[in-house]
Image 1 (cartoon, helix red, strand yellow):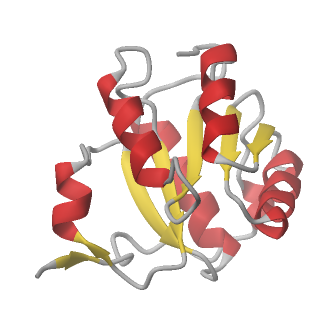
Image 2 (cartoon, rainbow, N blue to C red):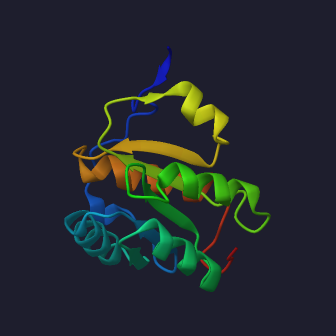
Length: 154
């Protein structure tokens, strides 16, 4: 079985402060409080408006209530897990092209799982434990490739 690994495009190890996410709204969905805290702190320091959800259910409710420019989504959570949420996003006209960064503790993700669930150019995978520069670089690339400005919303 072929797999997609997290070695897509290297991100340079520049100072995080060189990134500016001012005005971007980012939703982080993860069942680990430590991950939520770390990501909220880091992204807030880079100017992002960060909202967190400690469960998939809470994250889906927030998506119905507020516009976001990007979602950081844990794959392995109690139902609904990251895959379930991703499928709902891709079936929704409103969120079909919303950029998603999968955050996972898995070393690799089976390609069939990923492709069958609607993988698109608006999605990347980052492994938990990778340097924060990697995640921030991926977020920067996704926001840039989607040609979204902080003023636009879904």
